[in-house]
Length: 230
Length: 372
Image (cartoon, rainbow over all chains, first blue to last red):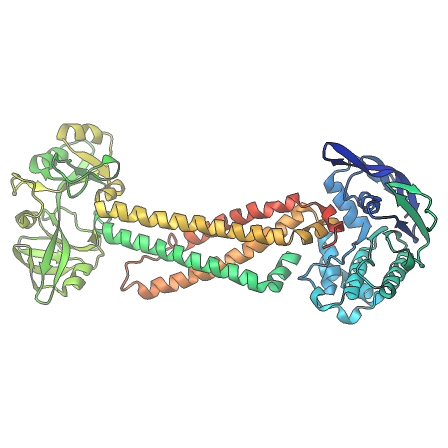
């Protein structure tokens, strides 16, 4: 299912005035492909990701999946947004953001519990996902015993275990060296293709993005042509 | 409680510390509640065991300070024969008997002890249930089991009570104490000879401390009080007329209430810190799709587990202590001193935790996008 952002604008209050973080952005990420969103710090990349994931309602515009009706609009309630995230979106954050008390396997089983299912009902799928990210032998390890790269792989497996329509990835390589960064991007794009997810990936490091299908450049909240290198 | 139970296992040091605090507070509350009730019974069981429903007091002009709320006191009350005879004629009163109460020293062949002498008319029916066919008679006394223990006396032994020399007629298998001294029963005539109770100028042959009433209706009591010059209280109200009981019971109850309040605050403070420290995890869980209701249920369940374990262990330890000490310390064990404080602690602890955990509702899932 494609990810469709339609004329999305996000305005934050900023003291006595306002700050336009995302300015009338329309973007389509086709199903099974990865689009990298580039831009300098403060250009609105993470704000756009927050709107796409229903973490923040847009000031105007909407977000839709496939040809269906908008899932996030200016009037979408928190409860509805939470349900959409739970059922249809996978998140990979800048830091792995794993729950310290859960093993790698439990990080994945948690999603089933949030959905009201027995955690054990997804154990097979969770173990498959951990195998897919190369962490099968570490399934019963807690985050504090894993390396930074391994933690990020668990976070990626967690994002895919619920079979999401849309995957939102926020600068997943910021804490990794170049080589591991490339591996992580290849892993995300490969899994996105395999599970037919529309992946929107925010990054500031263009050198790791060889595997992505498309790129978009954001400057001052607007999609624009990439400026020529100095 | 998928995350909550794993948090308990993962951060077991922190939760063990918290549970230990709850165990200690529960131990104190339950033991203090048992002690409060035990001391209360040690002060009042002689009165509560009376087979009557009301007591009529007088308030003397030169009596000691009155009880709480300006009520009468046993030490200040002195009724006369004309008053108990008048009470016997009041509608709705089926029995009106004089009862003398005096704290005196009693000496047996082996020891001396402070006791409370209850002076009653032979055949008055004022002995507690369990006395069987025993009755008082001049020159003879009946001992409660506590008095027999304190004096090391048994039936047939000689005792000196104040200026009186008497014989122990029987030891009753009943618990009866008044103001922390065991009760013995004498005839009213003997009690009047003790002289410990008399107001200046009173005729020693015509007085008692209160009139013990058995009533079928209390409609006419207030009017009769006005006519006869007495103040009538039901048996429960009359306990506050035991001066030492009121102040002692009130102080101990205040301590129990404060401890329960402290327990709720401590639990609330712990979960405030705990919730703040895991607000990042909460934001991530919300971003992943956890509803606020799910997170609140998870966190309150976690608090409930700690409270039930802590309160359970604390109650068990306190119960064991009271069982071990009940022969040497006046403690009373019952549901009201164990289960009731335990339930109150759990309920107030959950309430304290819930106030702290409510912060979860304000955590913004957007925060999950921030690096940490």
